[in-house]
Length: 196
Image (tube, rainbow, N blue to C red; front, side, top):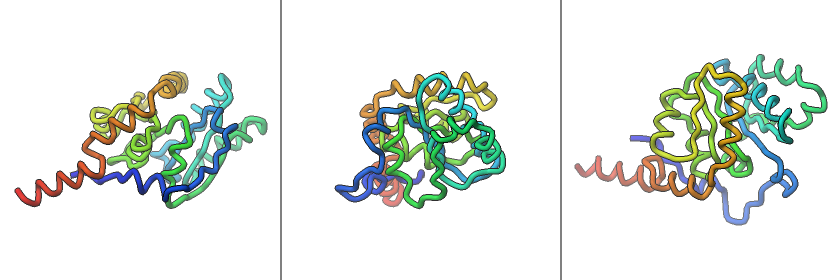
């Protein structure tokens, strides 16, 4: 049995407005969410984004506490580049922000069943993530996931992001809605297990 993802809860109440302006939507926006633990490899996410930023205008949204390595990576950025990084810290309901980004970048070297990946896909946001077991299982069930080898170079990550932005968000949402992770499907699996 898997945890269920309720899209309505992620989207927030009807009429809730995004805090992202139309001008910001026109820019390629990456999001990385995680605790400041070394296994989250936030510093890699920053290096990947910086390489992407050198190719095309983009922003990086960091949600969660930052590791020491991530702080050092941020501090090493030129000021003109650093201004395109948005550090939001911990946000209890970050789901709404995931629908405002171009790609979710999940660079962890280990995970269980990563909720950030599932929440992104539920909202139709493509995910570029490390090829680790939890992510690979999700990729086998839902479209919109691009797996990158854990030890891949920054350039491989950037190429994956460029492929990710071409993904059709509506197709990703539909794929998620039909998957084992969608709320109604999880509840049905519970019902079947309970009544068997």
